[in-house]
Length: 552
Ligand code: ARG
Image (cartoon, rainbow, N blue to C red; front, top):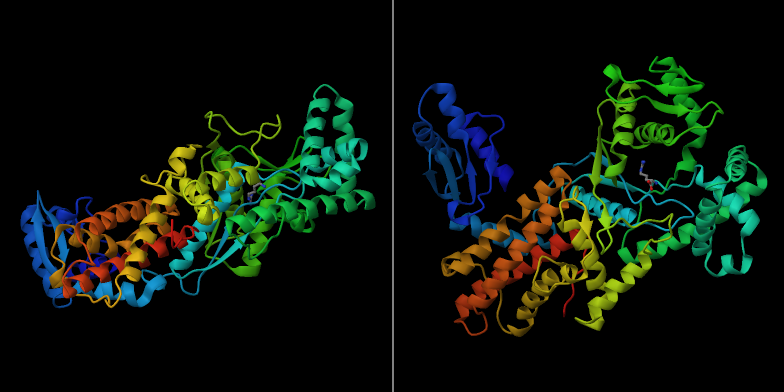
């Protein structure tokens, strides 16, 4: 709706990009604009005077009966109130369109790639990868809702120096029985042992480097073992993906790009942006904007940045995306900034937006970082299992959906750049800003439908004059705005906030505006609001990747 309002304002005032916001207090209108201030400045009149002129123009431009009225508030804000007919039309769209309500064609014909999850082979998936998976999937859904074609790519860490250590450890210390039984656990313990033992043993490091080099040269035995590691890791990752309900359109790991890396180095040298320095090939940035980034070491091996550049080149050729979004931890901000700048200098993605959708850390209950090397990591499967167990105290039948939903929602409801500390009580709080609370609100409203036998939802705004009814309708019609804003910013927390606020309003509506006991006309009008609430909560949760439950 916000873009409809903005269009009306543009038509009325010829202002190309009018700022429209949603007042926090619904009493101040459905939408507000500061346009009068902009106009007053340009024309040397007071904002109050400008506001009066603009108000006339808006009312004559808007479709007849679109606004109820427009107030001039404070020093010159224009507070716009939608008419009852407009609200009724929106409500009826919600009921008619269901999960499509609020979606847009904005991104039609445009492709976006979301690079997310990307765990590393032969290591357990970390909580950081969990965040990437959950945030990446939500951002994908948000953009799909705006009409984009979205391709989710799992950029697996299936190449690199960790394989040298692992190959060495595996060849010397592996216990075949153990490996067969619990492949990843065993690989991880080998990896940890290697790190301990190599700490004061330079020879081990040299040997590991030799194993990496052999793998990169295509050594038969190392390649065979590497394939086993990849296969077993993927098997393990898939279990978690299944539980999280995520699926990838493509899964091209770092190894896929290896044949293209020399080409990237050649491109960079021939463009004059990279040169040999201390034996390595480095890209230097204009004005030393960033420290130089190595793309080829003196032994001819390539780096993480080289792979990311090749990946951009490949993605551009294959999909011509308008955006490539990276749901990757904060810690990699410099790496990605260098890669994006280098890609620009290389002309790899001239008109494509490259954005790091960064996020903070997920900290353990103690507020400390989960760590793999010291062996203190939480296994994601255990974590999800624990969520499920906790949720089964609410209801064993819905435990998986509520438990997984809580973990996801807890993550998505926080501003993604903040660090979050695990807190089971908050995560599963039935009365707080949590998945169970939203799932509960949904099932509560949904159950009215079953109880209200013989009643049909019928929109009649004239019958919905009570405070809690008005607030419910006002909240519902803002769903498209919330989804759009969250998509624009790649910030799912705005949608989560909206859902929480709306759930509060809907619960108060439920308590203050009884349906079954009301007179038939009123009951049916209220039922329409409740069913619109069901649609909106469901649609919002679905975008966040959270399932609803019929009974809590
Ligand atoms: N595998 C990397 C890690 O675990 C994340 C990869 C992110 N994606 C990318 N294109 N660099 O740290």
